[in-house]
Image (tube, rainbow, N blue to C red; front, side, top):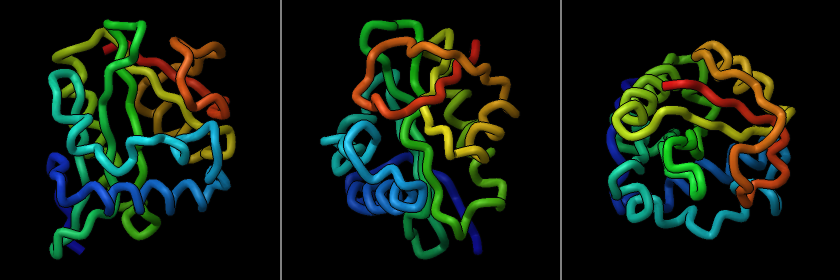
Length: 159
């Protein structure tokens, strides 16, 4: 399978929402307090198309969306961004594509921010190991209050 990464386009919105919801169901996070309840899941191409905010999608040779991640501003913390909505379907996990997504996201974030923050769930163990491999350090209090109040694991990284 040939994979590539590109910035999100309006035609990708529904597919990105489907990827995120599929992954949240897989990890038992399909409820309030997680990205599941995010009212903007269907309009990422609009939200992430402003300075300091960007979303990238992983697509196959048929341009089918299989994953993605974003960098977004954090209200109340102007020098800190958040790595947001990093999800990949099972079929592309282990291919190295998540590393490419992370590299692109962090490179972009360095142009706008001093630190990058992540919220995740305790049962997403592989994701935690992945973040730690990039130098993210676990913290025990949120940087700011977000709508993802059930995300019980947090990380931060200096850019």
